[in-house]
Image 1 (tube, rainbow, N blue to C red):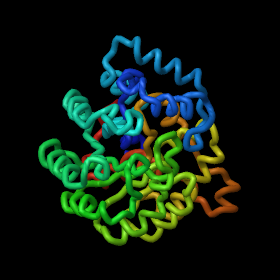
Image 2: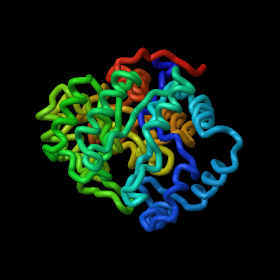
Image 3: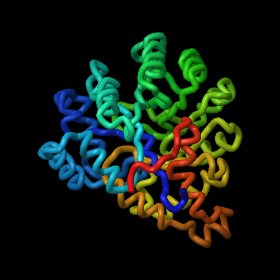
Length: 330
């Protein structure tokens, strides 16, 4: 399996410019665009406005359906399966509607049931915990859902607010894996405070059997997340979005990955790139990646074997959610 690399994308946003079209007249959307779309860095990853404008134009004018485009991206990169996460972003519309719904997730996964799997976002603090639990039960029992995303920057309460306890308890009871955005919100309208991974301390302690994947290496609180992962065996470190620094800031990437593997162990570090676009170059870069010698000697970061990379790229996540790591892409 190490040579073939079964590859999973756990934060598989499928979207294009049209996804955001209904919210474009809201003030919050304009602030979002100015904060993210004009260059700079987003969660530590360099961004350049022109590239994103070109991507948006390509998405609008492409004749291929957005879901079909996602499958083509997956095929090109050798990514076998993806968990489809809706980009709800309620803050863009003044909390009046999500820019992407859980219904879209159902439709996308139905089109390619062997490649795409649901990863809904239930938004419990804004719509009510009981309503979120009802929808969670529906997805688990009727849509074969194994994994969902929890997005604290767009919630009213931080991760460790006890009003979430019934929500976490239900996920634990249903055997679902909970993906959690950790780290800065990084975009206007969200709460970075709510995403601080130190809040996971209480959650992991109270819900010991709830399997959690903390996204984005927890950056800029990566060490706090690593400490949590060293303490709680139910906490896994996800690489989404920050994995992209492997091509733009390889030294930075090496330090993030080295800390994660050192504290959590290679069995609890999980690849993802936060969206199904431009996947191939990052996957190929990781296949070729090796921890720099000076970081191995000076920081005790371990060299990665082919087996380690296989675990990180897909086998760890397959084990977490209980799916067979069967290759879908030649």
